[in-house]
Amino acid sequence: MQFTKQSVLLALLSIIALPVLTPSTSRSATQEPDESRKSESETVRFATFNVSFYRSEAGQLQRELAKGNSEKPKKIAEIIQRVRPDVILLNEFDYDSAGKGIECFQNNYLAKSQNGNPAIHYRYTFSAAVNTGVDSQQDLDGDGSTGTANDAFGFGKFPGQYGMVVLSNCEIDKTGIRTFRNFLWKDMPARLVPQNKDKQPFYSNRIMDRFRLSSKSHWDIPIRINGKLIHFLVAHPTPPVFDGTEDRNGCRNHDEIRLLADYVSKGRSDYIYDDNGRRGGLAPTEPFVIAGDMNADENDGDSTGKAARLLTDNPRINDSKPPKSTGGKHYSQTQGGVNSTQKGNPEWDTSDFGDNNVGNLRLDYCLPSANLNVRSSGVFWPKPKETGASLIDATDHRLVWIDLQIDKPR
Image (cartoon, rainbow, N blue to C red; front, side, top):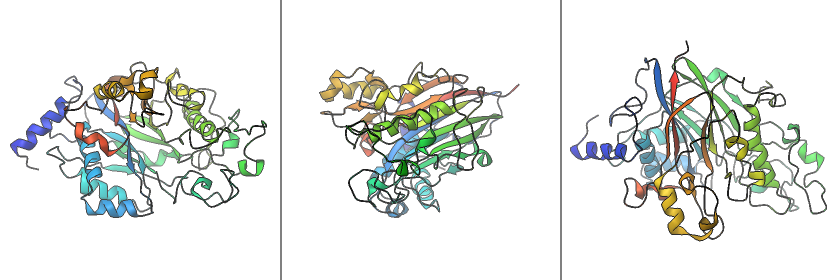
């Protein structure tokens, strides 16, 4: 690959725009994250990004990405090229069983330099079917009709809308992958129960006998790094809104997050079973990274029971220094509205919504287990006039990343 003087300068500027890294964690402008891994200690960058790659019809995203000239995917690709994660979860990427959408995004966007930034290509990918758009054949929203997007196991106009993708330049141990798409909500002990005004359950026993907990899916994807397996635990819980006083989506969001918390907590995962019938969660010593758009802020917003705290306050999880940005604080101050009354640190925000009723929230998380060493972290949210500021309108979420030091087993 050849670079012009201008492209090299832009690539260097992209690196300068990131927080200062130690020599062992920095990457040169031309270095791909798939170089040979031979050192005793290796730094690996994990990331999560809600890219808003959902469209109104099945196949529409694939057709768009196949053309290679769509502006927002170019911006998303440029952000990824600037941050250069080794392992990344993409939320809201419409699923197709043949993986053509992922292939087109890789070949037509990531593998092509965007504004002089070095191209990037991921050797390993994983995606699978999700619950969005899958008709439950029942009246889940209680409006007296069936067959609508609200009556799918996860809200969606077609199967696979708002899907998930994992891209990695570290080997994915595909034999060890576990998915939890079919886990039934009723099988979670002490689950939250949406209730009508008369305190009766909103959902009948007949509905609950088939109701899947995960609105998309929950995945445990083992990643081989420096002789270790790091479990990449990913999900995208439903937003705790778009319901009524019964709080059916708020309750579900809480319990989708709880499934992740229980999965990594000793003595609390025995009830969990995956799509192959295997029970239980992770052993106490197994390292992991939890990632995804959780649709819950631990301090602000209207999530039920401040569900995100099931993760951020979990002793198995290290959230002592949350990833932050300069843009989060800037936009919270300049946009005002409900942002001015929020309790959370705006530097931790990862999303930008209507300032009259929602505001900017920390919804996207990249949370390592407490037995992993965090070297650095960040949220890609530059202030105006900073490098990359023109890219953030591609989606209402921001890319979140952490650098982890992975030592070889002794």
